[in-house]
Length: 546
Ligand code: ABU
Image (tube, protein in one colour):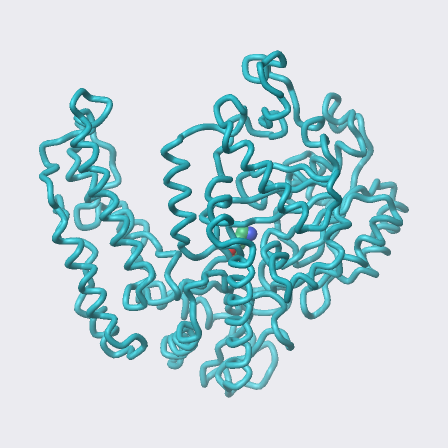
């Protein structure tokens, strides 16, 4: 059965009862209902007889194009408004088989005959309806959250421009914007004016991959042409709490994940730098050639900051490349209050920084920043003559595409540039400070409650707060393996119920000797203290009978 534009995105009666009882957001149901009315009023044109062939570039397709896109904008506006309403669900969760079966007429299968535009608009709404509202103030599941309106406008413009970052000739404005933004980021890191290079690439894992690639090329340029057989067995170093992309980079680049030497962390998740030093010596004595150390500024789970200056001293002593994975922590550089946690970052040879995390830029937006100018180009360039002609009419150093390991490169820069213009650095600073204040608020709340337990002592350094929920049954078992076995089951059970009910989302994981615990992270400026209160009450509500 096909659905019409008017009858979707509505709450079930059970959802309404929950919202009526939640008392978290008085009066918000009314507002949510307004949004629903807005949805259903808006089929202002009949799209049932129009198909994509009737839109531009069809002759006289301009009116139909305008109406279709306006209708789509209405759908998106309704979604944005619902995403930010506490009375809306974060997720209307369904299992894969349910979505594949064609839930309520929402079919994922591809037709032979074209669907009409009415159907496409319904499909657009359904796509949003069954997705996750990552901009919702009660979405705590991932490091990338929020829905920045200027960033969104930037993304819309980028899609409309539909161009590629490889050459200046087809992206003149975006290439220059990338240069300006990269220079700003270099300055914020603290690199000298004459230093600094970089590009935006698809995510932190790719940025980290670039860092290992560059470090290896810097030490052994012959690897580019002669491969791994031309170089000795390499070793690289990273902490036990670092991101898995460091091992993945070693695997992808033919270095081998077993040649990644994992350094232990202290109880807060910071690399123990004295152990780094002894591990480098031990690797050398086994005939390996150490070449690279990854220090993390903002670990994925604990939000810990490695001691960058101590690590930089060790790298200098041994002549190693120092990379700082600040994918998550980079945003704190914009805060005068918090940037002190990253002292020493200016000594790094390369830095990963994801504006799509703490700065709230829509996905994806990730930079690899390199201190030495020209190295990216030397390492990656292959001078494809059909694309990078050296005799173009302009300065071809602006054809930045050969710095990249991709050919086609998405324009990720515009939304960040536009947001920076809109907020100023001060606006980002306020946003970062607000997120860390939320983390501190949660930390103090958890300390006061007996049904929750913090995973590590002390105030959070980043916006990560890690904790267990302790149902009565677990509280009654003395500390030890039996209690751990029970506790390990609690977070997944609560999460499963949480997804089915859909009013908030938070992630969990085990780590080293710690059984499954919740990790709350704040990067959404829309989140307020009442949302933190809601989260804890919701976990306790869902978990108290376990
Ligand atoms: N390292 C990618 C982000 C992971 C997370 O959101 O938890």
